Amino acid sequence: MFKRILIANRGECAIRIIRSCRELGIESVAIYTKEDAHALHVKKADQAVLIGPDPVKSYLNIHRIVDIAVEAGCDAIHPGYGFLSENPEFAERIIDAGITYIGPEPAAIRNMGDKTRARAAMIAANIPVIPGSEDVLPGLEEALETAESMGYPIMLKAAAGGGGRGIRRCDTPEHLKENLEITKREAMAAFGDDAVFMEKCIVQPHHIEFQILADTHGHVLHLFERDCSIQRRNQKLIEIAPSNFIDDDLRTRMGEVAVAAARAVNYVNAGTVEFLVDADRNFYFMEMNTRLQVEHPITEAITGKDIVAEQIKIASGLPLDFTQDDLHLSGHAIEFRINAEDPKNNFLPTPGRITRYHSPGGFGVRVDGCVYPGYVIPPFYDSMCAKLTVWGPSWPLTVTRACRALREYDIRGVRTTLPLYRHIAASKAFGSGIFHTGFLEDHPELLEYKPFEQREDIAAAVAAAIAAHAGL
Image (tube, rainbow, N blue to C red; front, side, top):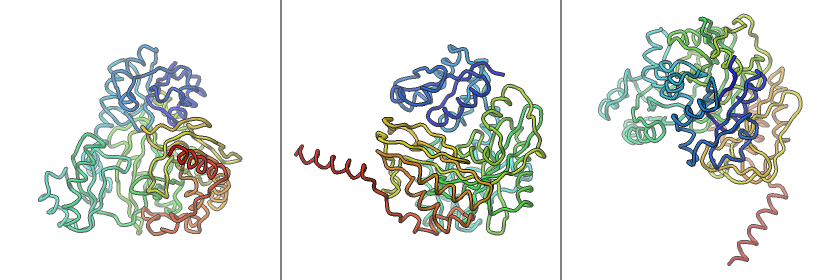
């Protein structure tokens, strides 16, 4: 087992990894920028090192991160999710320095990170894929020809994409003409690569992903599925496990295909195979994420497995100590991504100071967070400040428990998505447990909640107005 692990991440992600390290008896080394000097991951790690002056680029400085790991005597690096977690050059630089990368081989990251390569690999392995272009689109003329042969609607997607970015639906040739260059610019801005490919649009699909674990001894298994269909603009908001849409037979077949997909690219460590499932329960490979997923806690809740600990043990060379037959579904789990955003203002990020923070508790309630009273949410990073995971033995009880936990959760000083989630969780539509990616579009009333203004919020607004008036 490793002695010391550097965590190349920040916030709740870094804290999550620190906790597994501590339970395994491994020292943790955190990195931080000046803006993160008072962040919780800095306080909780066994050691913390200032990485650089730039609030964003410093977390992307491959050479500096590896140098810190060497200087600190780390024998492994965990990338978490986001930042450099799917960067093959980062993994290669770590390995070249004689340090273990806690993740898949660089070749797997590279091949699965390029969506056209991933499609080709899945086709070669007889994995069902969404009909689409065989390669990236060289230009508008070829894009129009491909769309005409495929039939509208189609989806334009960044070849190097992920996380729901660089995706645009086109329903007509005119839409395609409008969106091709826009998608290419979005792809370049997000991934440094403007390559775009095309897929047939599966209308109102269910977004189902399977968690994979694979060790260095040839064992590959899945930890069942997560339903990530509740989204806004291709960004996940609420995830559940297991899916209420698929039955045991489909679960078995999709799990076997997910394992076959991992074997097809000689995958090692934790990963996620993502599928789109249509109304007739036909499923298609969409992509493979070669890292830990934000929503992994709901899988841990229904399986009892610590996925981060398994990642670390696999990277250290240990075999998985359980088989597929040892795994059984236990109850239901829901994860709410608590973002510092204002849903009433087009989900605009709301960085600022936390004036009050009270997290929920009780049986079946878990909070992965990185904020506290007095903490200032910086404007430079992802707006997610916590994740609320709720487990229950049945779907109805899990929903009831989620409503209770959401009511208990109190964050003041900034606008968050909590009021929206309270409204969604209490709705009859959510209680049905069946979702597709157009769920919020089909239920616009869920976005029309009335914000709950507390006395403290009103007093703060009045004080700000008085101060502004006095300054005139």
